[in-house]
Image (cartoon, rainbow, N blue to C red):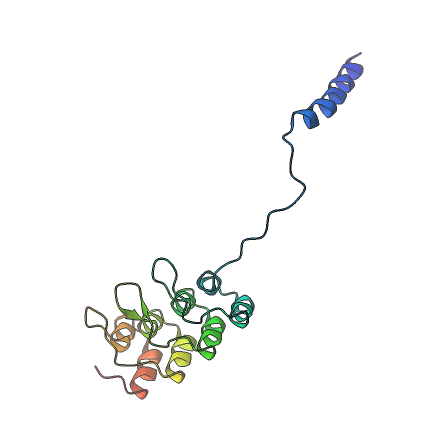
Length: 158
């Protein structure tokens, strides 16, 4: 008896659940296409290269003022940084309103590989932000000795 009752409830649920479910459109929505800045921020180098090949501007700035290169540096993505530099991104771009260059940011963050790429691309080693800080000062403050030496070899002044 109990087994029949359980079976009857089970069958009723099988019939009722689909009838109560909302109708779902069988077509899937278009996938969201990320901007160059968004793609650079998450380090999707292959997608960055694809967007650049489709005509994206290597110096794209998002709605809050971040550049693709700045986003790649903040995300610590050396391969993406190199791809953007090769595509002509401004090596001396500044982040938001604070005026920190991407080199200052990478130097203070201990990102040796990115610092090397930025220096090779011609970054201004003596640029200063609004508070008077330079990449060298950032690296010294954060105690990144290898980066301090790289910056000095590139002509950074205290």
